[in-house]
Image (tube, rainbow, N blue to C red; front, side, top):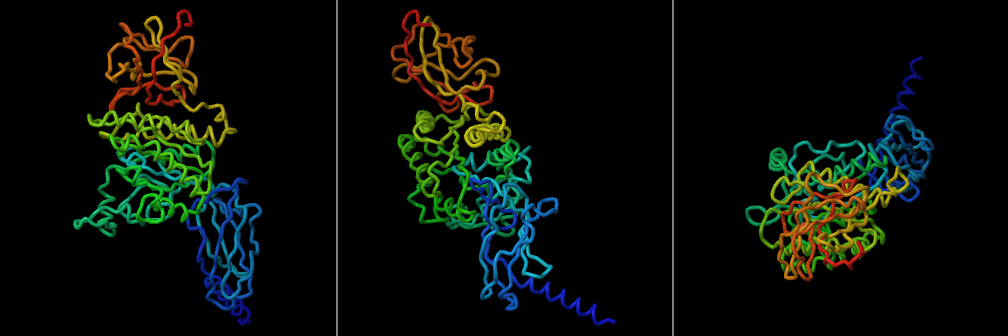
Length: 497
């Protein structure tokens, strides 16, 4: 009477043992985000090795489990192919955007399965540039995490994204390592790494709030690939250094994108402060546009969305002309290349002399999300009708008033308190105080009227955001700010206003 139960128990044990004798040798990792294709699905590429010869000739089966432990419709146990010579490679195809999912794999006719947990299918975004993208905001009241936003951290591990996203000191790639006492790059590990993490006070950036905002607006999960590095110049991001892989910034970024699946939805970029010097600023536009073109070519995506920030303020009195030159080059780049979008930061608060504060990093992130939604999700709500933010068109002087017209304004231009940020300059660049009143034109919500005292200098120029630490506060109804710009002031023909 006891023989039958013993036989059943032995059979169950054999089934469990057979399932445990397979392992995943390549495929998605726990917590990974896979870039969705145009059909809103992703294919999961897998390789499995069996260490039990009894598995040869048997089918590998897979199923997909949703967050509520239900089977995803259409993804119940399905045979994928037979194990041959202890090996199997194949795909789980057309996994729909969303998640989190648990992928379970087993050998045919067994009950026990191995699994990959907390998978998401959505959009991957690269975070690159220097310190303001790396994140130097105070780690106070930071953006709370979202279960639908994951990150491929700098140690090449997938997990739920939390601030700070960038931890350079334990990155896989040596280009990010700090210098030790012997002036050699060295990765922090063990107790030294723990001490660094515990004592860290700075690190909030725009990447996480951007991703959370995008999830809230679209419902599409987001994966972030942080690649930024404090204090880096365009030369250090030179695409020609790609073959150095982890020993160069561009090579590291490229390697990490490939490790994360090889496809991304877009790039978020914030850099330029390190090029705001007399030598580098004159070459900034050329190098920046070459970088964008190289990224699109190397990522095999000629129309890859690329959103960047015009550098903001710096509490410093040196190289102010070069600082403005970089800002003007960034404004120019937006019209030179397609599928490029810029947001302004000159009106935002700082947490130190050069880094945007944590609260205003959230505002900056929403500004980038506005552009991304306008371009990539035009059919959701009214995002397609959203304009890309105020851009200067012309400045015309007549009867003691300079009228500044803008394109791209959402609703009405506005400011908190007295409108500020405009200045008039002589032909030699010297500022000449003349503006005594500024207001939005009552008849044209996308125009500003500047009332000036005295005769306008010949060949005068109008600036907005002149210098390194201007006070600027003009934005539109979508909180998209007026960028730093300069315009030649034209004189209107009598009777045209």
